[in-house]
Amino acid sequence: MKKESEAVMEKETKQVEAPVRKTIPIQYPYMNEQSIQNVVEVMRSRWIGQAEKVEEFEAMIKQQLKIPFPVTVNSGTAAVHLALDIAGVGPGDEVITTSLTCAATNHAILMQYAKPVFADVQYDTGNIDPEDIEHRITPKTKAVLVVHWAGYPCDMDEINAIAKKHNLPVIEDAAHAMGASYKGKPMGTISDFTCFSLQAIKHITTGDGGILCTNNIQDYQKGIRRRWFGIDRNHRIPSVLGHADYDIVERGFKYHMNDIAAAIGLAQLPDLPKIVARRKAIARRYREELADVQGIKMMEYKNDRDCSYWLFTMHVHRREEFCRAMLERGVEVSVSHYRNDIYTIFGPRRKDLPNVDKIDNDMMCIPIHAKLSDEDVTYVIDAIKKGW
Image 1 (cartoon, rainbow, N blue to C red):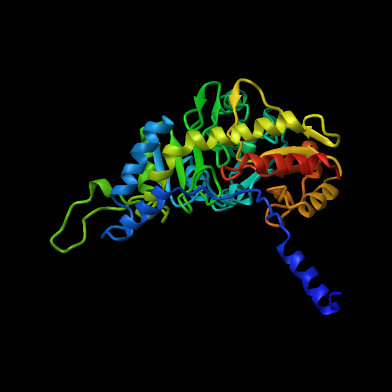
Image 2: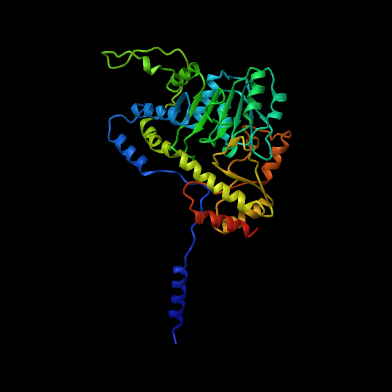
């Protein structure tokens, strides 16, 4: 007969040895081996600031994303702020925007000492509702800023028609939407300005970074100058004093990308098609296998646009119970972003955004990223099907 101490020890050993499933993260940074090799190469060189790799990366962006005038910067927020600055938004101006976004989108408006004016969203997409934009336009309105929620493109024809009628520039915050398209046109080629994010967990990353896309050379040249203190780097004149001669005639910022970040981007951008394809495959399984689960309503997806699925968002009944059940089963879930008008800096909370109110109560995102295996996706689906 085993001694009591031996039995306890055997029981504890079995508990330790029992397989424990790791939590499935909602997002995961994409990083390939070439990215690492590129960074090592740059860090062993003389040039780690803005130099040849930045130029190479911008040339690749032009070719692969079909964007005529890309300006790389050090964050997606910098790209949005730069777009607002070039568009002429200034103190006391108003910008029509959405409250359903990362706070960074609307902080960029405050950085110009302008006022965010929140329009309602579409309940079935999370995107700004074109029908709620026009009546909010006033003589102080200087731009319309839209966000492609989760990577699903907004109704850009309707939005640009309203903007054109009122002579307003349109700025797309496409932080979620790299690799998406609208009526056959890739994001970055449709409006006056489009802003991508290369932050850690976006489709591709440079550690942190962003891209400002413009559709005309004048705005492009302003972006090139203003991302680096208003200095035209391409037309500096070398001096025997060891400092190039140039003039500064406009305000600028320290928003330029460096060669370390660009080296990562050069390795990552060629993988974007397969990254987006993988996210679409995961989303397709979710939509097919969770469509009939009680307590879940899928978001709308029209055939005239192509979602890049940075997030997979659903409407979920009894959301808090859902979250508790998923966390107990090892599945990370998140609302991703709170409505911005609950924050004091943007407040008080608006009472004229009924669809924001609705989506704020039931929106939920589940894991979607290139690191998910088919087994992981099956586990997430099964965890949800168990109920909550």
